[in-house]
Length: 145
Ligand SMILES: [Zn+2]
Ligand SMILES: [Zn+2]
Image (cartoon, rainbow, N blue to C red):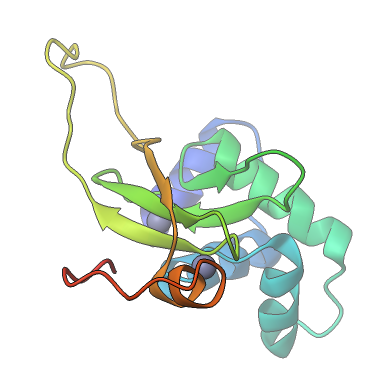
């Protein structure tokens, strides 16, 4: 894993810095799909002097080498996810929450030489809380998340 992140960054012309490594390790450790601000708050525990601008640069480089997925829709803040290829997302219209959705849709005919690093599929709807609080509807029986 560490070798992968270092190799990928270096081969793409990025310096392997402790900031980039710390951001990546934090993203691997969470499934909360944090914003850059949230990443900043967490990584600051380990690297007290790290700036938000550095967080943005770190995630940009990680996105660029395919290790992290940027999830962005409309005007809401971008969310970041360590790229695990076989999952999609549920996104709630009400609270903008993002949750992983198991999804293994390797497209037919994908050339073997093409490395899929993220499946960018979103299932948009309402989480149980928003369905209840915003729409006044009972929760669905099937577990949504
Ligand atoms: Zn919601
Ligand atoms: Zn995800």
